[in-house]
Image (cartoon, rainbow, N blue to C red; front, side, top):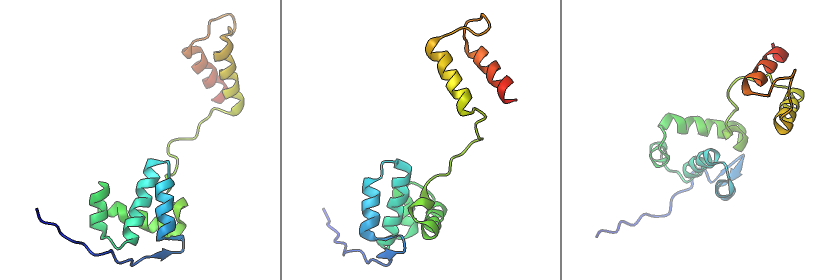
Length: 129
């Protein structure tokens, strides 16, 4: 068995305006969102002067993605790495949501009919256009 000794990594980016290596390491270790933790790990590895290609291989993403994450980190720090919500904006208002919850919880009848998913859908469609 051959043992290859690797020297301590050089810290090319020991500190950024969003935190030093110790702070980024702490953010990474304490992050509960797995996707955000993965991105913080990428930044941490880049701060340890690991090549983008190597970081991409370690994390199972393409090199371009690592570049995007680094740019977002440089611009906005941890907030820049958070995923934007996707999808269309819900037409269900808080009032409608409360009404649905009430219907489901007490299983009341609407206009003498039993409450069904179809009835709720029709009611939503009528109220939201």
